[in-house]
Length: 369
Image 1 (cartoon, rainbow, N blue to C red):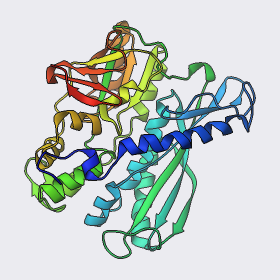
Image 2: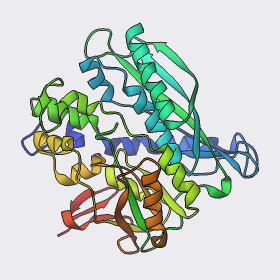
Image 3: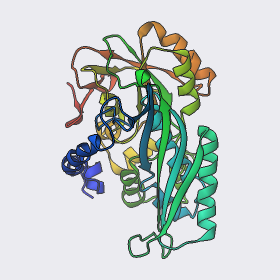
Image 4: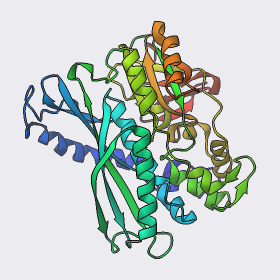
């Protein structure tokens, strides 16, 4: 690591290279869209790539939303602490929260667990987390796959390596798919608090805290009220119940955004040519300041990589904002609040005036002075 401070790339995640590599993959995946059925037929793919989930037509005005995701290098923290009963919740959360973003109700999920060595204690603990996550999300786990691939996976200690990935599906009426295609100047952005770091940016967080900051995973810190590792393992919040309540109460929900990798630049994953101005961010959990200080991470990079205390966002018309906040709070998101607005100016950007930052997809967040 260098003395200039850390960023995602110096921590080992080349997201620029990843974006370049995705082009060829995406091109070939799109070629398959017509293989199962054309428009109006069962199997027709309804959306382009780039949304949190896609939707496949299965009947007149009925679509099957589908998404897949894993937990990433958060699993290495679980291995360090030998605590495995929370990462299953993360796997559920990362999938069902994405399914919500197209306006769908999550129904069920399957999982894939790859292990260096089959260990009954570890697998049972992972399953406990999956079960708790499914209960929180109101879904079933319809099946899954376990693979022993010792030649491919190495853990932090011999035999401890594993990976977990899920694929979730849900249902959405085709005329109720939400992709943020009708946003207008003055629409309101609502933020739902995160439970902490969730399951993104853990490569930067681990290297900032453990390598550069010199903290140990089991080191207790008063600022956190527990150990560093326990804080990093806090499960990703599942937003199914409040968001479904919002969808049922507010027919005019215009966009739903899971704040994952890319941080607040996720707001730009809408089909409208607009910008965003974020003016009322809540105080972020203490873990983020710890990461920033330990790795000397630039504030703009923190906002590009981490959720910084807001794990999910919804966009509604201005006149619906107060009732939407009330609905979210009553349905299990007591800290839901207005955090900003849609703006017709500076399309394709996210401005955070009180931080003096302007963010765009390729540039990240830079000083707007």
